[in-house]
Image: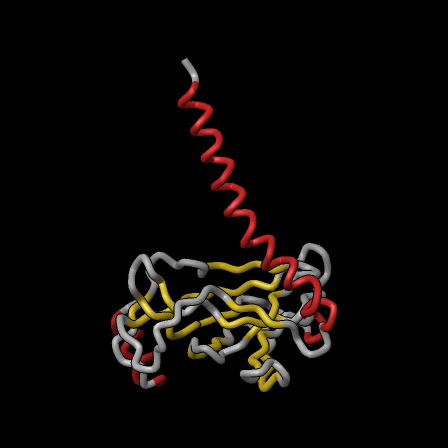
Length: 186
């Protein structure tokens, strides 16, 4: 988060005005155990409450003696999620930096490490106050299925999206009913 490091990131990426997320929203330490995974996605693009554009992800891996057969690689996909261009194993001290954009699809392949082991990473995000290529469209995280995940893409992901949209609505409705009941009490 130092100004010197942020200046180096600006130099490396060409993105001026980077701001480190001191609140680590969604960032910090990530631990993934056996059978864990992260579906392919593009990250949300705008923090409305702070009026900031998401621009960079930085991942640092803290796994000693990680074996290739344990999976857990971060995958960087093409814009149509048809081809994985890069797959980077979570090796100790490896640092992955990539721009967050409307086409920066990425995910984590399934983790198959032994019980008791964890894939460990530290994630931080950088923002800017403006973004020249922004079309004004705000979106949350957008998930896509990998090409070999037909059932996941056609059934499971749509069901999860419906659940995410309905639960906040149902919770809000339940709160309104409880408030009305409380007001009616003598």
